[in-house]
Length: 225
Image (cartoon, rainbow, N blue to C red):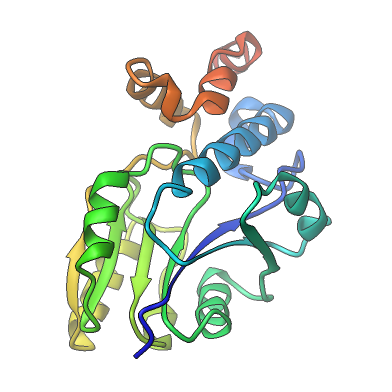
């Protein structure tokens, strides 16, 4: 099969009230949108370092997503519109659209992905392996499929803490060998902000836009209200 590797970042336009809705309920829609944009900028910069052949930003179509994210995308990124449906349907459609080759889909709210570990996994990625990166909330921030395998995305309890465990079990049932990457922190709730700030203190250069937003006084005032 083709050894071409495509990296696809799934994202929503950072429009107040229409992104990071759980976080927005706690710190306000404007601050949540600003943080979402900052994290997306840092994620796209971080993933530039990976040894892949094609980089794609998958824009949710709602709220002028394609136009807004096209303006944010760095040079070298192709912007495509996501399909309709839930998260599983969108990822299923994305992997079909981005074939032939291997497709690795990642989220936009993990500003500190474990790049060294991901790079090592890519370099030895075999056709029988699925790459899976667990997030601290029970989901996952990365899934890499060597083949078009729609069953990995179907009948999943999306937006729950069971997604990673169920996906891992599904991959084993389907006969794939799982390559489990180090866990990473994705930002969905206000409780995630302090741990992220602490992680960034020693390496602010890894996510400078996120660091700047996390030091926004208005954000911490909003958290305390």
